[in-house]
Length: 129
Image (cartoon, rainbow, N blue to C red; front, side, top):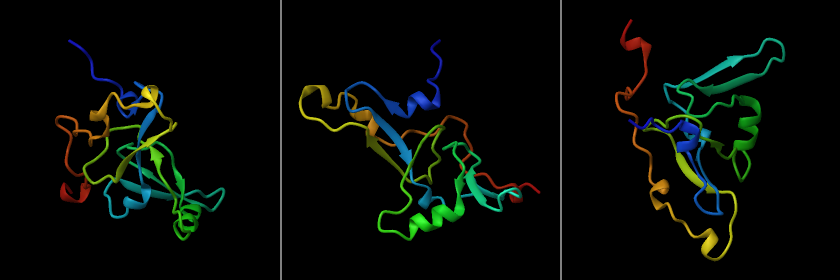
């Protein structure tokens, strides 16, 4: 029986020379029950991250806010886990090029991934207390 591909592999495509990655836009995470934040007592900075590990990085909230006030916004981070239905996703190509080596041979990768079987639709401990 074949095993499921690790989430990192499932969120990247290397079948052509474009090298595509599925990314999530943290600007769309506001109000998500998986978004957490904490204050680092050593630096005084506040960081935010994803409890569902859709992305592994922790983002400095102050720098995030500054970037969001610019014309370009904060941008996206690579998806490293299984995206939740509410995640704002897109696919980014590492290399643009012309010709057959850069032609997409995996158009299914551009579709939104299906949630894992048995994965809860939401996570809110207040419902269980």
